[in-house]
Image (cartoon, rainbow, N blue to C red):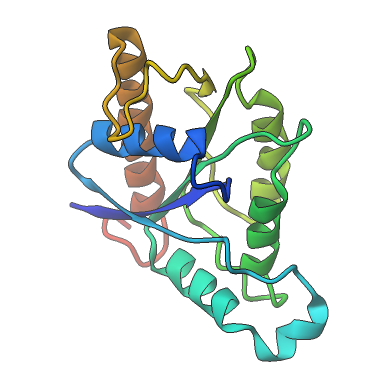
Length: 191
C-alpha cells in the first residue's frame, strides 16, 4: 500500500535548512510513502472576516491537506515557538469551525536548527495545537536536529552514516505510524 504524504515546510526561505532536511527525509523514506509539498507561502493572514468566502490559497491548502493520507511537518523554530507562516496555515486549515482539514491526519513533526537543541521548543509548542486539531502525532522517536551544512547535500544526500541511520529510522517509524493510524480509522482498510 502506498500512502500520499503532504509535506509542509515551516519556513518560507528559499535557502531553508529545513527544506534541505526535508529532501533528506524524502530520500531516506520507505518506498510506501509518496510525498507532495503543501505550500503555505501564499496564504493571507488568518482573518475570520474571510471565512464566508475563502481565498483561493486557503481552499488549495485545505484540499491538499484533505487529499493527504498523512502529514510530515519539517519546520524551524522562531523565537522558541512555531513560525508565523506555519501557525497561520494550521489556523486556516482548521477553519471555518466544523471544517477542520487536519482532523485524523497522522502527523510527524521535526526540524533542524543551527542551535544545540534543534527545534525542541517549537515541537513542544506544536503538540497541543495538533492535539486540539485532532491530528494524531508520532511522539517517538523525536527528531531535534542540529544542522551542519556539510552533512546535508542540496539533493538530499546525507553525508554522515549515523545521521542517515537516525533519519531512516525516523521515517520507518513514521511510515509504521501512518499505517497504524489509518488501519484503525473509520472507512479505511483494516477497519
